Image 1 (tube, one colour):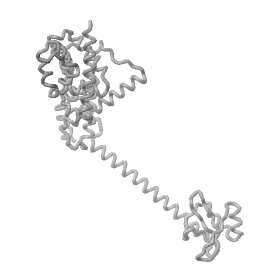
Image 2 (image 1 turned 90 degrees about the vertical axis):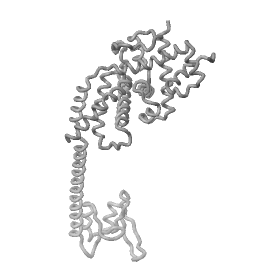
Image 3 (image 1 turned 135 degrees about the horizontal axis):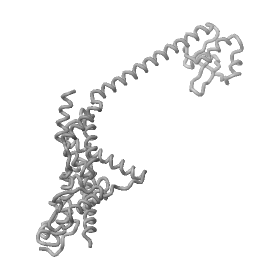
Length: 185
Length: 177
């Protein structure tokens, strides 16, 4: 037997991973009364801990009934899926309805431009050319087409002259910086 | 639907004791452990379709239990911080247990030992508490604890050593004249 007593740390090793305690220490533990007493105290504590857990008196049939009752009050996974699907479909219907309504409103405003615009005199076009959909407030432009139009616009919005090299002509551009969009008149 | 509940009833019957034992060994409170057990099965029921059976059902349920217990412990800690609620008094928790004397060398009475264990449980921090309970309360190996908690094996051991140091200190204090 070695004279060196087994440390607390080694005793803990023996409890946690017994295979890692050196043979001579195991031998010492078997033969040394003091070390064995110390070891039995801590091992006794862990055993008592386990016993302490095992003593709870529970009626498992009642517990099972309680659990199943609680479970029955919750939505089943299938019902949850159905609920989620219903929500998703509803959202899709709402979004589609809003989209359709929005596009019909846009069609109306485009047609209003066509009605108020006077062909052959003034066209309202986008920078990339072609007809555009403008806010209702711009529709009033159509009514001022016979007047000094750039001057009228200049009264409200700064006008910028834009020279189109291809067409060799000068346009008056209204730059809507807030939307990064230009409208050429 | 009926079959689903019937199958689940069997699952409850088979695993409720183990789940309760794990929860009790960590929390040390019977009522709290029973509540946790119920919560675990409700969660399991909701998630059962997503369970991939990569681990055994017991492992899956114990993982849910550990997570639920951790949440509970965090909640308790927060309550104590916010409301300055003291820890439970040891005297109220002591139950009579027969044959608690662990060895002929240990001369403390069953009730004293109960008190030491209770005090010890309260002194442990979150992970120490979980790891110690799984090792010495439920008998899981280091590898199993690592799988259940997601901690590395060396981390599990570190927490076990620290917990045993605390136990040792507490035993010394009690046995000191």
